[in-house]
Every structure is written in structure tokens, then in C-alpha cells.
Length: 361
Ligand code: COI
Image 1 (tube, rainbow, N blue to C red):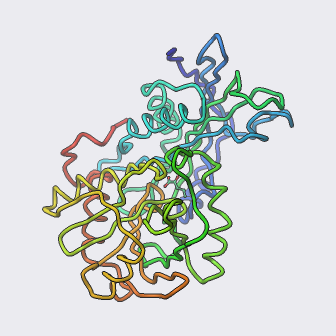
Image 2 (cartoon, rainbow, N blue to C red):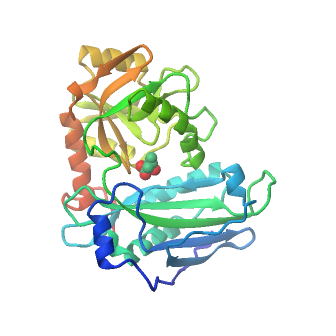
């Protein structure tokens, strides 16, 4: 694999300090973008080349560009955090890089070397450091690396040209309510992914597939849709864009990776953080019937969603076609909040990084 260098071509007209500060005061999620982006091309026979850090701008595509028709696209999400001393660090970018390679293999795309992925993210954060929100709040800088097939033509085949990009967006809470519990609609007919499909790849198609069920969840008054497995329609898989954890007293359980669940970096990190805090943490199968029953008899004490964007968000009301129940009295649970605090403390640099997860710039 070739490892291109990234040539800097900084913007002559970045946003003014006042404009940037106004955005950072209330960034929302995914609404504002920093002054620059990274682009790297891949061409068959040549490999990765033309790495550039350039002003953030629209990209121009021929209407017959492959990705616009057959959705050969993958992406990642990771964050950069401001530490108490003012420096900046990213959280486990190597894990995102490795998942990006797995997604690329599944979508018949070229693999970007791990060090190029990490360097591309870091080059952008270094350039746009002023966009990393201040230490102490919920905010961070969300990085969105992605790759698209750029060959022009309507033949259905792996493209012979690709474009890798990284853009960055200052981010507050993904859900407008912050750590307020979200409500979940369990979809028992629509599925997100099937065995042998691409559910474990981070590709836009999985998110497009989730939108109708997500709209149905919203019509039921819920914030998020929860998917069951595609074969028996009973095993809990994940939400539209995040993983799930079930808390049984001092034990936390997350659905086992079956090939149709996305392997979340936050999901993985929590197995370790929970064990560090003295909890039992395991992967296992949880059925929707068990969820309803264990919530009713009180053995299931808390449920939470997790992901880079969502961090850790408690689950409150759960609805399915045959019933509705309230998790943890609709309040954020104690274990959920403890895990959330422990993970954020590592990410923001106020707790020891025992596992070497933080990459200081
Ligand atoms: C992330 O958590 O980074 C994701 O990609 C999920 C998306 C719903 C924002």
C-alpha cells in the first residue's frame, strides 16, 4: 500500500475568530464545518496519491459518477477533544482506521493505510485547531473521514478511481436533550441488515436503509428505532446509528457481533472501561421478549445507547407493537452515568489513559 504525503494548501479566507466563536457557542451536531478538508485520490495502477489539505469547499462530480448510482461509499466518525492544558487529542483513531479498512474490503474498495488515515485526521485537526471546542463542556470536534467511488460510468463493478476525504464539524450533543433519556421504537418487521449482508460495514446504504424505520419510530413518538435480527425477528441488534447496552445490576451486556451489527468503537471501549470500574461486562444475545420481561421484573436495571456521536445516552421509554414500558423510571441510570463520566474523563484528559487510547497531536 502506498502512503502519500499530505500537501498543505491553507485557506486564504478562514472564518473570522468572531464567526467561529459564535458557532462554537452552540454548535449542534453536524451543522457547521471547519475551514479545511483533506482529500486523497486513489487510481488503479497508481494507488494513493495527491494528498492535499485544502479549503473546505463543494466537490464537483460528473452526473454519471459511480457513487451517485451504486452507493460505493464508506465513512467513519471519531472525535478530537480539548484537554485541560489546551492541547488536543483524538480517541482511538487506529480503531476507526482498521474499521475503515474492513468496510473498504466489504465494499470492494481500496484500503487506506492506517497511518495515512490517522495522519489525514490529525493534519486537519492541527490546521483547524481553533475549531476544537474548549475543555470542560460536552463539545468536541467530530471528524468525518469518508471515501467515494469516483469513476464515471454506469457499469456495475468496483470503480477504478476513488476519493478519500476528511471533514470536521464542531459537535455538541447528538440528541437535542443531551443526557435526557431517549425513547425507542422496536421495529419487528423492518430489518437493518441481513446475515452475509453489509451490516458490519460503515456504509451510507445502511443508514439510508434505516430512514424509513426511523421515520416510523418518529411517528410512534420515539427518538430512535431499534432493529431485531433478520432471521428470527427477536434478537436485539442495534439502533439506527448506535449500539445498545443492557445493565443487569453490576453486569453490562451488549449484543454479540453477528456480522449484521456495526462494531462500534465506543461499544468496544465500554467493555474495558466497565471492567476497569469493577463491573462484569460481556457480549450476549438479548431477545426483545427478554428485554420486556426483565424490565418488568426489575432485573434489567438500565439500558443505554452508545456511539461516537451519541457518546452514552440513556434509554427511557421503549415501545413495541405489543406493549410499552419505562426503563429506570425514565431517569438516567447510575451505571449509565458512571460509565459515561469515566469514558468522557479519559477522552477529555482528566483521567489516566490506562490503555493508550488517546493520540495527542
Ligand atoms: C457516529 O456515532 O459517529 C456515527 O457515525 C453515527 C451517526 C448516526 C452520526
